[in-house]
Length: 319
Image (cartoon, rainbow, N blue to C red; front, side, top):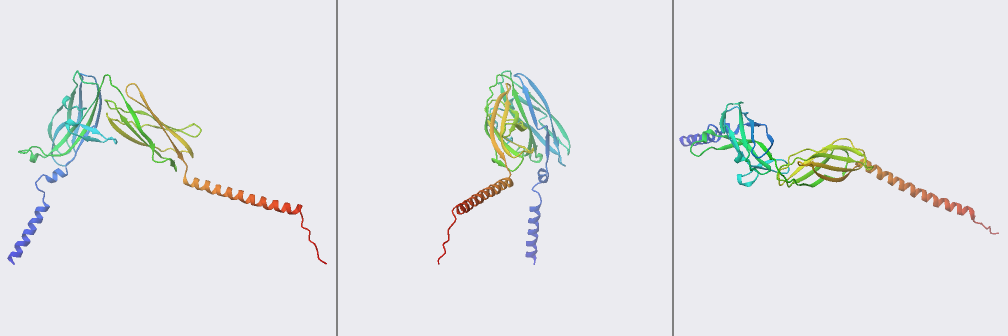
């Protein structure tokens, strides 16, 4: 009986240790929350300029949290999402130009900390784009001693700096398309993929114009302006949701970008033709064909009767 009791007691202890967190702050780390404002800085400067900016780091959790500030490079994908990369993975990096104050701090629940970062451009800074993300990294204070800080989560604001000078702009439209050629009705969704060959980010602006089969303007859609980073693609998806009449349409994309208003353009064709109308047209066509066939049959019968009337048959009687 004693051995069974000890065995059961060991099982209970094992279950308790499995349920309890490994340390006193584990649950706090899982529940940690932080936000940052604003999430984007788009700046323009000349070589030698000093840019002073302020951001806010907010502890949105119910626990005390400590943070470290830093700058990390990022690259953008075609969906506009930023991916953090190693310091040596990009040539467009602001880290060596940026100083952040304060670099470390602790916030009580719901408390906000103003953080200032100063970007000092060298007098010989090359014209073009420089990029970085100013990050607030959550630190587990319970593990700071001995092995150093343990990163749990991070959030940052993207900083885009366009350095003035002789910049060569270059971009092209890789794709301007719709998912299908025929639509039942609006909305019509357009996909535009643009590649930027410039040394600075661009933000094309313009319109998608719709014209009908007679060349008349049927509608327009303002192009959704998005930043496109150097040597990258950007996919921009947007929809025209106004009613369109049945027919053939030409969509023309006209864009301007860069300091001198360089142009980009593309065209595509699509149709608005609902399925019920196709069925109706097919039924009408079949009815017309049947009517024509019946008329031809009646004409042939009438011709036979007319011929018989002109040439009556003579019936001879015997006897």
